[in-house]
Length: 142
Image 1 (spheres, helix red, strand yellow):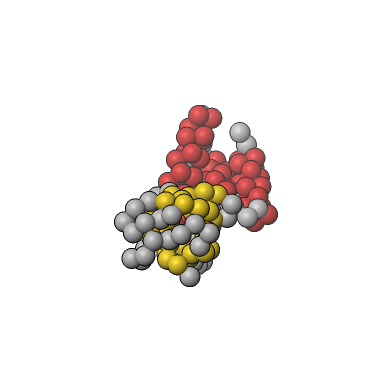
Image 2 (tube, rainbow, N blue to C red):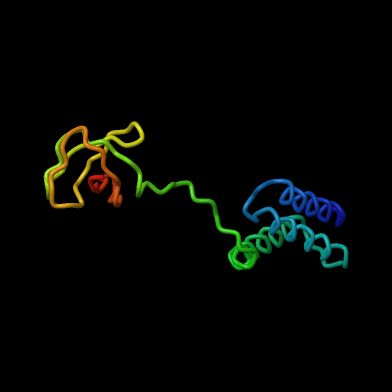
């Protein structure tokens, strides 16, 4: 492949990174393509498989080494897809005795529930979620 095709492909990948709300992935592949194009332009060329190997290795190694420090330096944190359920309201469906397990409804779903206090929680009682332990919510009466 000609050197300018590598450089053009690298620039397209860099523009793709700028145009999309990605997490700094395409920039490393774009830089790898530009570096392979520069190597080829300076006469450091080999067979096509070698170009692709150098591109792959450069891109993967730079991604592994520089992505986290770059994200940290730019104060970008990966988006978390799980929201916090502590503090949410829940309604007891089945009695929850102290030290026992019952049922409660939160956000339209039924959950296994335990009490965080010393008193039993009665059906229909509104409570607040104190913590989540797997698929069990710990409740405290309001």
